[in-house]
Image 1 (tube, rainbow, N blue to C red):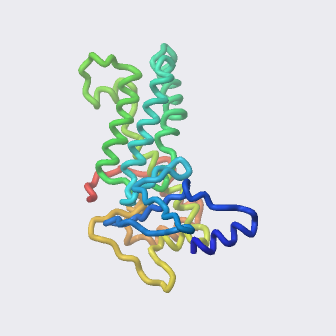
Image 2: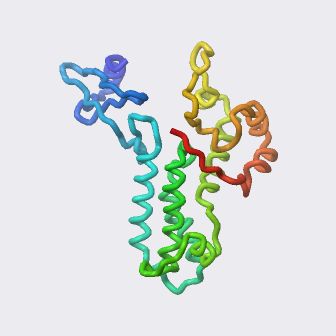
Image 3: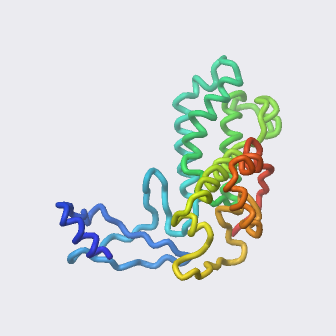
Length: 240
């Protein structure tokens, strides 16, 4: 396949840069893959940044989520004087959700969240509200922080809404991505998974109701009624 790609590229005057081309195998037990271009072997990597998203060889989103949270914290620190100023609290909260959450939740529509990932995201959410209103020397519990800023734990609900909007858009189309979400490959062979392994759709509804989920997606009104302003509670479940 690589030889064919190189051959077609040369027809258009393009050459593959061997130094910048990497190989990454996504598997439960990643093993090196041997792919050569000419006499040079491509480098195997454990993680790779593609379109600003960090992809790892274990297929999990934990590294990407941590990276996003770190970037969001850095952005918050740069504008800390604004977020901790005497501006109206509601205005400052809107600024945080607009500028800081947008950095933290980039690409969240495709995340598969485990319990540890959900904990990291909720900790980041509380950190934002704590830094806005409370001195680092004060001992204040998380629930008291939420009361002072008149907020609830909303970041997981925001991710769930984004997923619902994206999944609904995909399910209304007839495309390869829809086939992947259906869990089927060429030949209509059902893709199996280990017990307890989480899928992207598990955050939205019961996998056994997937047929009804697709029916709802075809109707914009029903879909927005189910996954509109409120997507319901997010339950922390430990998936290994």
